[in-house]
Amino acid sequence: MDLSKLSGILQTEPKFRFRQVYQALYGELISDWAQASVLPLNLRERLNQDCPLDITAEISVDPGDKSSLKALLTWADGVSVETVLMRHRDGRHTICLSSQAGCPLGCAFCATGQGGFFRNLSADEIVQQFIFWARFLKQENKGESINNVVFMGMGEPFLNYEQFIKAVKILNDPEKFNLGSRRMSVSTVGIIEGIKKLSTEKLQVNLAISLHAAVDSLREQLMPIAKKYSITSILKAVDEYIRKTGRRVMFEYIMIKNVNDGEDDALALAQLMKKPLYLVNLIPYNPTGKFQASSPARIKEFKKKLESLGVAVTERHSQGRGISAACGQLAGKKK
Ligand code: SAH
Ligand code: SF4
Image (cartoon, rainbow, N blue to C red; front, side, top):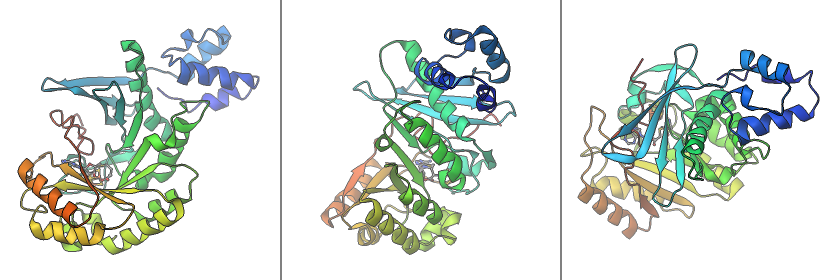
């Protein structure tokens, strides 16, 4: 699928064509311009030639966890990314989008980070992941749709800020997908420039920070980028974001056995996190090589400790774990 020539082609058309085209593309979710019967035949033919709508993708299902599906999307230059559909019991769906092909930040615990970096995605390529799942759900014909979007797939969204925010705006646009910005969440390692920019947007996208350690020395071992952005500097930017937006911020903390899951870690974390609009989300680690996951009992204890110290904390259940799809651990295994 490639819409880069679309606005050029529509320029010479009457204005109402834009609305017709958006309705066909984003409302009816056509996958071939021939299906857009409101458009004149010659325009449909031209669009089919210059703006192909087919998406090349391979879906995988994990026999052990049928609630999540993963798709590997591949573009004309051979670059591919993964995107995940999580089906909730109540019929709602969350999708996880990639913002980059690979990731340049090389976090030690992350399969994507260990696989290297290929390139940034364009806003259209980010949106195509949404379109792919929207078409998929439409085909199932159960009347279900995508309810939430998380930017927690491959890559660091704030290192591709312009395209990321453009994608958010396309999803949010009432003439396109009309997905409320409160239904979207972005996760960052703490790129301060990005946190600042997001706080000036008129969009209420939820912000999540990948913390994973309460002291810089440990964080630097896990996440090389921590050498550039200290915890103190990130929290300062977060506090400024909260002051400006009044919105709650989630801190992700993956539980890695004997690395960051001890009593001392909980104490140090509580020191940082005991603030009104801070929420800690404990995530079971999905082993991708180097480390092991904390036991469920350890996670429970850790959670209790934080709670007893006055921290707001939730625990993410590891949906999609079997297909290494709990977001953020997606590896372009094909490349
Ligand atoms: N680059 C961004 C967004 C993508 S990662 C970021 O790092 O925040 C989304 C989340 O998945 C991050 O919190 C990341 O730390 C986490 N993650 C990465 N590898 C994981 C793994 N193996 N198990 C569990 N969570 C993981
Ligand atoms: Fe990149 Fe996020 Fe993985 Fe770190 S955890 S390597 S920032 S995708």
